[in-house]
Length: 109
Image (cartoon, rainbow, N blue to C red; front, top):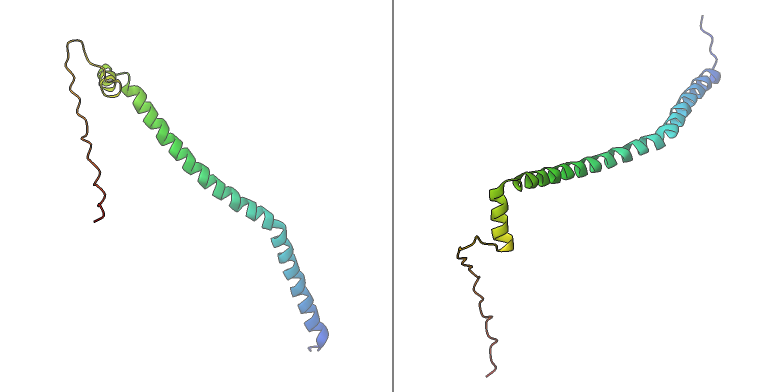
């Protein structure tokens, strides 16, 4: 035998659904700042990892340059190129890039 409760049965189900919905919304509102903070921190982490990669590359380049300067032949080459040094009795010939004249402005007739 089924008893028809009419509107009370429907209202009870509606209230339970609203309570569940309110609980889900409350949990969402409670955790929303944490989710946003987590997203910000992930973006910042990606930016910092990119910077770390750049700095590691720069460190490798500097280390390679430092190691290269321990080689006497490299030091000699750098002194010749950058400081224009030469060995005693050596004749140095320097080539200069020719300067070109700028085109003359058209004279009025």
